[in-house]
View 1 (spheres, one colour):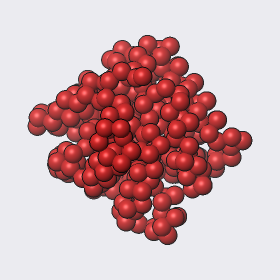
View 2: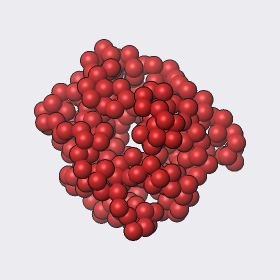
View 3: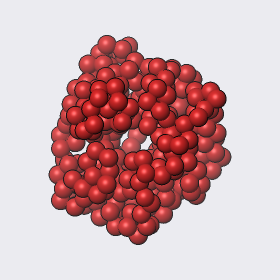
Length: 283
């Protein structure tokens, strides 16, 4: 059994309930809400709305990872992320803040400014130094499965055995993090829905989450508003996919997910509470 994780003002007891990570994109080009929270005031207001909705973690990202997204400079990513972290802490936010980045320098600077978690969509492969940042700070570390980059990933969806290859990647990177000095109890795995996967492959992963749970780490799943839901719903507008997101989150919870990463915090917190009452041992 994985030990509980204490971070910020939260204690995460894995298996007791589903924890909700609220997405806070401070980018002009994210697929769902690009540009809406690009100023400090807008980001602060959205953070407070997510907190009021009951989320357990804020996930702050300054680099869009939508398919085809261009890489911004290190300086620009720092300029987007660090002032928001500092402002939230100055304003008294005690909730854990995760920084969604693949760059070790951004992770280090965000943690220095008051962030708590590192959420790396590359699983520590773009900049392996990020594992050392996590080790030095003992920050909780989310490692996600990805092939290629956001610019190339949608051309890299040919798998011999999807579940086996995703599992092998995640376990390899978890072991690399542990070898770098990250404590096992501070590693969280993410199968990377929407990243180098077709719609059918995303559904396959959601159906087989119990297999990923056998790896022995807490599991984060992020289906929120993604294009595979749009394909199912025939809905091109990401913000109109929240009901589909709710269904995907319920499947994730039934399959053993510990954290779900979502845009609509207030609605999905309610979904998770009811799903927990249905599928957890202790409602």
